[in-house]
Amino acid sequence: MKANRMAYSRWVAIVLGGLMAMGAGSAAAQKQGGTLRVYNTTQPPSASIHEESTIATNMPFMAVFNNLVRFDPMKPLNSFSTIIPELATSWAWDETGTKLTFKLRSGVTFHDGKPFTANDVRCTYLRASGLDTESAFRRSPRKIWYENLKDVVVEDDLTATFQLTKKQPSFVALLSSGLAPIYPCHVSARDMRTKPIGTGPFKFVEFKSNESIRLARNPNYWDPGKPYLDGIEWKIVSSRSTRILAFVAGEFDLTFVADVTVPLMKDVTTQKPDAVCKLAPTNVPINILVNVEQPPFDKPEIRRAMALALDRQSFIDIISGGKSSVSINMMPAPEGQWGMPAEMRSKLLGYGDVALQQAEARKIMEGLGYGPNNRLPVKVTTRDFATYKDPAIILVDQLNKIYFDATMELVESSIWHSRLTKKNYAVGMNTSGVGIDDPDAVLKGAYSCKSEANYTGYCTPHVEKLLDEQSQETDVEKRKKMVWEIERILTEEVARPIIYHNRSGTCWQPHVKGFVLQVWLEK
Image (cartoon, rainbow, N blue to C red; front, side, top):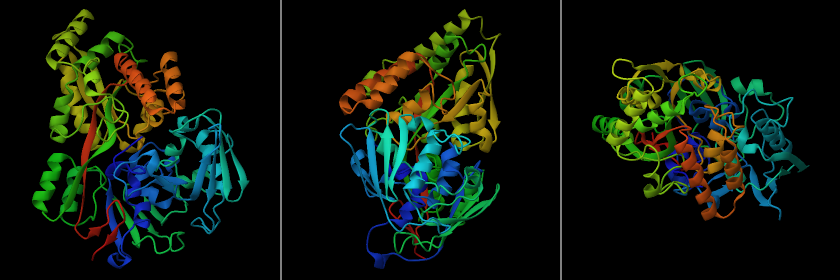
């Protein structure tokens, strides 16, 4: 279970939130004060991280919260061995591996002055898991993470025990994600969507729809002297060219994490030579959704032809200058722990010789009655977001090489995940970032019959059984083989074709110091 620190250490938003509050190093070198200016790439559907599936919510609002535990930002890769305390001070499994007890930090308060206790831990995860039916979240995209949760027992104000129905070694890692913050028990889920309250280094100030988000320093933060900044101001800028130009002009101190493509990074560093830019894997696979409930996509032959049409290297060369990686669901090596070896992957459907595969795809389509004069019309639906639109354009072109008449349909970003949940699409171009390189988060999240993020409705007993078995396996090498078998089946059944794992860049001004580890302004 590893992920690249730069892009997704405790999910991406922690770079701007908690890590600013938890930096290491000489205090004399760090300056107090200033407001960090950042842009958000789209309108967040709400401020409630637990209820949303988009980085547009997670990134600006994670600074409001803390987790029980988190991944150590000082480490280049996340792993079980790099999980460190945050609101918890310690944790331990019992001998059965089904009870996980956390000792909590004392003296912590929420932004409204109410004390943080074990009861808030209980409320947060009973809501997220759906066990609290009266106060459950409106949506819980990662509810599948907590499917084994039976209860959270409050032993005392500073001790909470998670009781599971079966072993789940990844459970602590899931709690370390920036998608698992602690919410206050006394604040309704409705209020958390518009006026979030947490224990984090920054307090929510204002959220102007389609305009801006403002956070202010929490003067009562439990980690003395942190954060260094007085505040963070987010401006919502949907046009990538506009926001990159604004960064070059000095209007922003930091780009949105992983928003800068390889070609754009060259432009930025040419126009602003003193800008600091870093390229990193994002642990975000670009993938195709096919709605099998909409004819003719209920036919396995058509879905197979679509998988054979893909020229993955073309996507990678055009969008990332050859820097992204061919992969399946799990992040490939060297950063990923669970990625299938390239030699094994090359034998799977759609990962061989492109010309031969596209010729086979055309034969399949001809056998179904399609051809140059009788093309299959389809809209490739995608989010109005550059990371989605760029690969969608290439997919349209590649599908049209096998007798499709494909066009692109753009969906307003804030309603994208609602469209997916309602299956209001035939073919979709999607990205799937969950912030953790662990099969429970990636595979169960996307393919379990019970997952809200299973947007295609893929559900087969044999894969469901394998997903459950790998989740309980404690031997890493045995679990890898189980994961690779799942990946093989998903690929052969064209469950959700993965095109590539993205690599992209983040840039910041030279006066921004301590990015990832901590942030302060040298001006």
